[in-house]
Image (cartoon, rainbow, N blue to C red; front, side, top):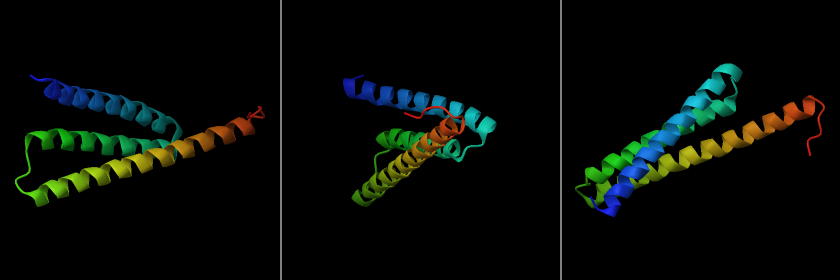
Amino acid sequence: MNIFSFLEWAEFVIGITVSSVFLYFAFLGYRQTKLRALALWIFSSIVYIILILARFTGSFCYPTTRGTLIIFAVACDILWTVGAVASAIAFVMLIRYLLSEHERMGKDVA
C-alpha cells in the first residue's frame, strides 16, 4: 500500500464518519426543533455522503472514455456545489434564528 492509497482510504473513512456524525446530530436537532436550517444541513450531509461514495468508487472504476470522465467530474462538481450552497444557506438561517431568539429573550446581542 503506497501513501496515495492510504490517503484515499483515510479521506473516505474520515469523510463518511464526519458526515454521518453530523447527519445524526442534525437529525436529532431537527426532530426536536423542526428548523428548516437543520433540514438543509441534513440534505447537505446526504449530498456529501453521496459525493464521497461516488468519488471513492470512481477511483476504482476508471472511466473508459474521456467523455465519461468529464461527465463524472462535472457531476461531482455539481454535487459539491449543491452541498456547499445548502450548507451555507443553512448556516445563515441558523445564525439568524439564534440571533432573533437571543434578542427575543431580552439579552444583549453584542
